[in-house]
Length: 168
Ligand SMILES: Nc1ccn([C@@H]2O[C@H](COP(=O)(O)O)[C@@H](O)[C@H]2O)c(=O)n1
Ligand SMILES: C[C@@]1(CO)OP(=O)(O)OP(=O)(O)OC[C@H]1O
Image (cartoon, rainbow, N blue to C red; front, side, top):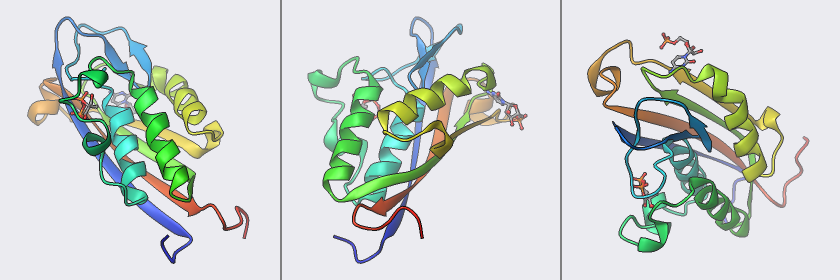
């Protein structure tokens, strides 16, 4: 166990936008011409948050726990991966304080769906919606994200040791 009461973690993910796939972000299916390609449901936001949680707890990364070579995770619902990762984080002695994330998507608009994403993530991580914040940015038309070749996400989390009080 770490000698510190708090630990931070960060995560990043990017998936290619392709035709013929649903666009799923934060567990929300968004009406769009293209969806994200991946072994699982390719939910880049949940993968970034999962990696941030695992990183903060010193538990490696999403691919170590859920390999993309394992048929068990083909088409997997990333909410299940997030919940399992958080179970491991709690087992290691940590609880979530808050999560903050940014989706990088030229299109579609994320704002109208952010509340539903927050609700899903809060439910999966057993916190209230006040502890989860989802932001979105275009890439100002620049680079692969600006050309709508993919969607990326960054996340940061703060964990508190389970044996420390939640209030100072
Ligand atoms: N896919 C997106 C991208 C952006 N937003 C919202 O628009 C604001 C401005 O974004 P810029 O990239 O032009 O700075 C941003 O703060 C979001 O509120 C969005 O909803 N969906
Ligand atoms: C989630 C996993 C496992 O299905 O696959 P992908 O959906 O391809 O996602 P990625 O973020 O590339 O890596 C983690 C994988 O192990």
